[in-house]
Image (spheres, rainbow, N blue to C red):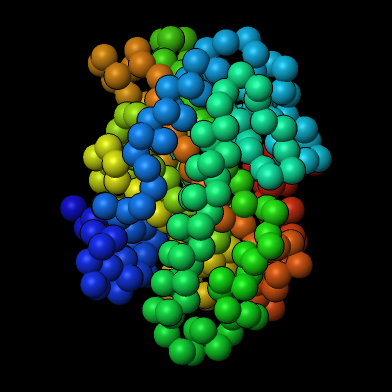
Length: 280
Ligand SMILES: O=C(O)CCC(=O)C(=O)O
Ligand SMILES: [Fe+2]
C-alpha cells in the first residue's frame, strides 16, 4: 500500500502523518475527531437534495462561486477535454445554503476547518528549516480569518451507460488550495499516482479521513510537500448503478497571502480557475 493510515491519537501521529504527506502528497487518519454520524447524515440528506429538483433553485454564481454546479457546468480537469461526471454544491460562509437540508454541513464546515487548521500546524512543525524560512508567514497565519475555505458536497450520479467515451467521474487533477480533507466517500474509486507513474487506491474504509496537499502548499514549500495528482474512477458492476457522495473541504488562504515570489493566493487561484474553464 502506498499510503499508511496514521492513528490521530498516537503520540507520533503528527510526525508520521507529515512524513506521509512529504513522501506521497497524501495522508490518511484513523480515529480523528470528526463525527462519522455527522458525515453520514450529510451524505444521506444531500443525496436526497441532489436527487430532487430543489438543486436548480441555487444555480452557481460565477462571481461568488457558491451554489449548485450541474454536470453541464462541472469542471474539466487541466489537460482534459471531457467534463467530469459529477455535480456539486459549493458552501462558503458568505454563500447560499439550501433550506432543504439541515445545518449539518455548516457544522461540518466549522469542525472540519478547525481540524484542517490543526493539521496545517502539524505541517508547519514538520517543515525543514530551510523550507520554512521561505514561507511568507507561518502556515496557520495564512488561513487566519480566511473566508475562502470551501466545502464541496459532491454527487457522482449512477452511470447510465450513455456517458461520453473517455469521460470519468473525476479526471486526474491536483487540488488548487493548501490542504484538502476528505472523509471516506460512500464508495471506493479514489486513486493517487505514485512517483513511478502507477495508480494506487487511496485507503477509504468508512470513517477514515483522507488529507492531501494542494498546489498552493506545493508552491509555498517549493515542492517539499507535493500536490499529488489523483482521480476518481468510474465504477463497474453493481457500484455503477449507485451514486457516490463525497465531501472535500478545501482549506484556502486569504487572497492577499503571498505564496511565493511568483504568486499570491489570489493570482494563483485566478490562473487555475481559468485553466479549469471555471473562470473566463
Ligand atoms: O470525490 C473524491 O473522492 C475526490 C474529489 C476530488 O478530488 C476533488 O473534488 O478535488
Ligand atoms: Fe481533488
